[in-house]
Length: 140
Image 1 (cartoon, helix red, strand yellow):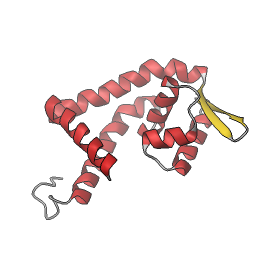
Image 2 (cartoon, rainbow, N blue to C red):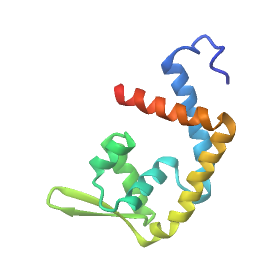
Image 3 (cartoon, one colour):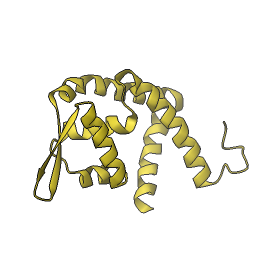
């Protein structure tokens, strides 16, 4: 599906959603060997890199709604990859030993994803695109 020549090719909404669908498909292919969706994987990687994160921190970092974060955490708990602890009103999320063992494979999946999209669009374009999209997301 080409967007540049379509009726809506200059529309941010249409173009960003078309890109998101294609990126999602590629990401799912890369994370499939671990049986994790990209959203589950990135949440778990955040918790592995900084154990004890609170769900609100994860929501901000991953730019997802708190209810979505809760569902992702619940699924990862079912898979015995994270555990929550509660102290008063604070909830913290920690990786399990099983998750820690997965970390090198997760890094390999992340690298595979990066390698694949850079091979398609090129290093310079991918770097600039990520920077530009981050700036636009921050402004919106």
